[in-house]
Image (tube, rainbow, N blue to C red; front, side, top):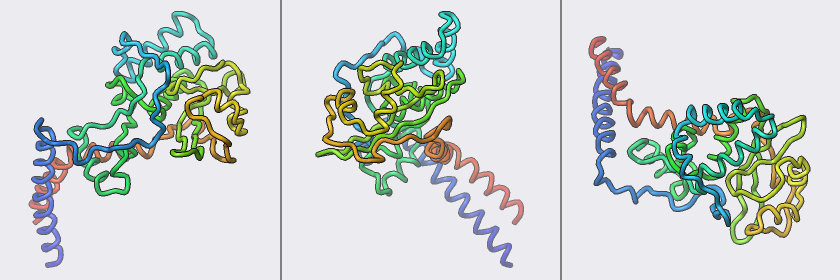
Amino acid sequence: MVNFFLISLIKKLSLGFSIIFFIFSIFFQLKFVNHDWIKPSTLQYYQSTPKKEIFNKNLEFLNSMNELEKYFIGTINKKKLNDIESVIFADQLLRERFFHQDTIIALQDNWFLYILNFFSSNRNNSIYLSSLSPDYILKSNSAICNQQAIIFQSLMKAIGIEYQSVLFNIPRHPVSFGHFASAVNVNNQWLYIDTNLEPDYEIRDPTIFERLLNGDRDLFNNLYPTHTVKNIPDGSIRILYKNKNPAFWGRLFQDICYFISNYAWILLLLIYFASRKLE
């Protein structure tokens, strides 16, 4: 009796939710749906645009990670670039490929993620909605610091160069300086890379990375003159995720929400027919 009741309940719930999820997946595809009710108003990282931002419209054809890696590695082989030249090329390539602006996942692509975001404490920012998929980001001409770092590090992984993430969280009035950059190991020396805010510095100089980690205020203010700080407390600049995807769990979360948004109704329908057969 208990098993029969349980199977009957599963059957009814799976059918009901299957219908709901199917309706939602169609509804959020409609053009007249208003997105404003769940549109984030702020971003999780510093949003000041570089003073002389570089953008090359001719690179728009690099609209997937596969295309970008093929172009990147092909150019390296054609020009016979060594490791440091390859790193400099990757830095310049991403500076030219993107504007400094967040690529947010569209409501129609992942409505379940928007629903979760709306009921979370981050409903007014893009922490959950900012895409962590290189392929999705490359469909756009814009990317913020963590998005560009993810793509840059993917290129380093493709050519076998060690990398790690550099995270900034420096107290500053009126808004703390939050930023995300990268470091790469070339000839046993770690070099600092920031394709996003595009500071003017010598990439080949390993002391840049060391001095930043040591809280060199003068260097920081020289690199980022529009974000000057009075001091850099210990731990405000740190390194993490050596040779690892810094957004692994966030990307997994977004992918699960994507599956629920687009295919959960099919899975629930299969559960309905299976429970009906068992019943």
